[in-house]
Image (cartoon, rainbow, N blue to C red; front, side):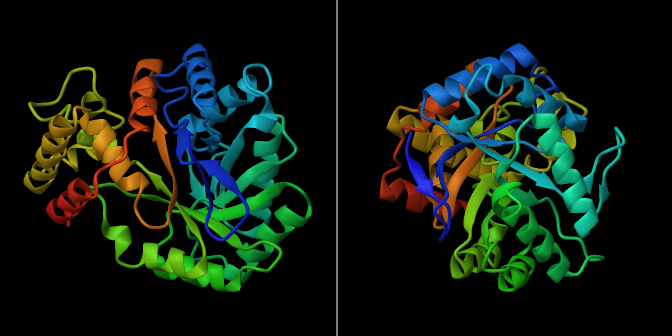
Length: 312
């Protein structure tokens, strides 16, 4: 698997990242261990976690696998703070200095590690001055708790503001946002802001909840996320007529290339300007195996351009 430098920093990550959102929700510890082993064996390094995933269960599962299944120093562990989940089932935005650092220390204790390779602010907090957030990020870096810092889910102006006030000791190096053939709004302001400020983009939800794999072309399978109460609304938001045209174009391209729609959709977003890595979660090892195989695909320029047009 190829590795890329994140933005203008020296941080290098695999261009495919392993998401852990489903761990503890449909993916148990044994299955997670199998996924992590296969991912690292394929050359992957970036593992994305958060205390918000599965009410903290995903993070605890990862903690059990570090060193026991994969040596900690072989991974680039990316975590986040800013949404206080200390009480199960709740999530309150708190990006104050106290809130961020308290959550970070809790994450480090749960993971059993002394640092995160990348620590990201989980959301924009209008109640907290951006200078205070920047100061918390700097303290995390200078105290050794984080090697690099970034943000998640910011709008273009929010990223530009945060990047402008970030200190030289802790510049923003990454921003994680939803980005796919069915979610291209970030190209209007967020991507240009990231490129201007030397911030690398982590593309999350690159398969649009599985819609771009083509599995929903003939309805909603009973064993799919679309039939799951937890994710049904997210998936159904993509089941529109314009989205269906994009999915058909992806399927046509896949047929012509002798590969899967998953591979085509993943390769398209992976190679967009500014994208450092594409974060993909898998329910089981079989799904992850399909993702790892897809990582080998390089889209011909003509097909990439055609997909640009149909999804614009």
